[in-house]
Amino acid sequence: MRIAVPLLVLLLALAGCTSPDTTVTLDAETVTVTVGETLRVDLGEVNDSVGDNWFLVDGADTGVLADAGSETEGDTSCEGDGCGGVLYWDFEATAAGGTTLQFQYCFRTDLDDCVGDANGNPPADPVALAVTVTD
Image 1 (cartoon, rainbow, N blue to C red):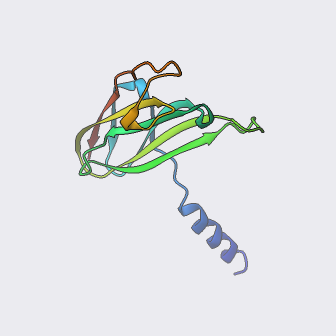
Image 2 (cartoon, rainbow, N blue to C red):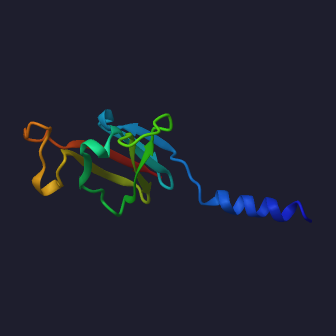
């Protein structure tokens, strides 16, 4: 009985930890996932300290995908200020259908004042990812 309680606590703690079912890089252009799966979009290396910003400018059809948020996994080998990491954006496949995600990179600006680089050049076009969700 004493072993069962710690095991139950461990299982409950792990229940909140999910990993994506499908991960694609931003240049994939298309991806197919199944209802109930988690789609992770790998936006690549970013460094907030130099002003890297990615925005979801055209979100998913909420009847097909639910935005589960973004996170940056830091570089564990970097121990100082200014360390970068890999930015991921997760989506939960909620129903069969199709939708398109569009992401915009901006340098040291918010989306409304978006510039593409340190020289103030215009941003590149948004990057589109077509998502098909199947039953």
